[in-house]
Length: 94
Image (cartoon, rainbow, N blue to C red; front, side):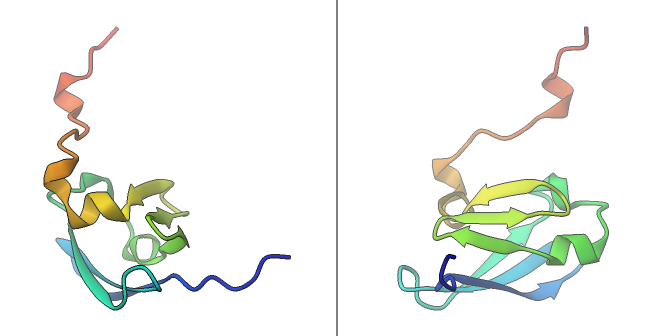
């Protein structure tokens, strides 16, 4: 049986346009992050209860199980270091 995780994540605010997260852990200390739905459209038009249910299974990994969304903490903190983003208009139609 695994021990209790020392890496926590908590939703402090959830609106129609963004999500505010509070993280804590030995690697980060207290940290507040804003997740803009304009930058992360996978959260737009989703049920707020599903968006607010987030887990932190690893120090650099956030997971929304009801949406099957995985994001790295590194990417959220420094989005310019991870310029690739899903662009549905560029997907080829067969």
